[in-house]
Amino acid sequence: MSDAHPLSQRFRGFMPVVVDVETGGFHAATDALLEIAATPITLDDNGQLVALPSVHAHIEPFAGAVLNPAALAFTGIDPFNPLRGAEPERDALKRMFAELKKLQRQYHCKRCILVGHNAHFDLGFLQAAVERHDLKNSSPFHPFSVFDTVTLAGMAYGQTVLAKACESAEISFNNEEAHSALYDAEKTAELFCKIMNRWQMTP
Image (cartoon, rainbow, N blue to C red; front, top):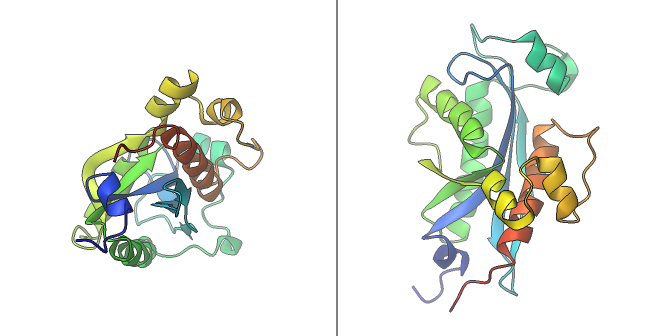
């Protein structure tokens, strides 16, 4: 359709959305999802990929979730601190999915595709939560396809660690703010856009 947004032609109708999660461990089926951030990507008037405002949630551990002390020490998250403003997992995901679907329609895309640094880790926790709450029909994300900035940064800069890849890309990165889902998602979005914008789509 002639009035479709150019983004709908860029990635086979998929809207890139950078996702980062903070968790209570490494096992998606059993360990708590504690924080999730999603940064949608679009094209500006010059055909450059740019980040849109993020959607974000702190999440209450689901009933029976594993909380590994080493993982909590690494992220610095206290899952039961009331100042987190944590939401029930189902409510948080439904809210975020609705906002992403609205953007997906706005940019004439048929679904979202997850972008992540070690993307299948984030996708695994997201899909486990979707299955826990029977949200398959609510999720805007492709169930298995991803873009992974580990691979992209390895190709573009010879770096696979997020902080080092950002440094090579001349993107500021504060290690004291890292391991916040929102901060990491937004830095990963900057990195993804910078790499992808080096290769313009051929008309």
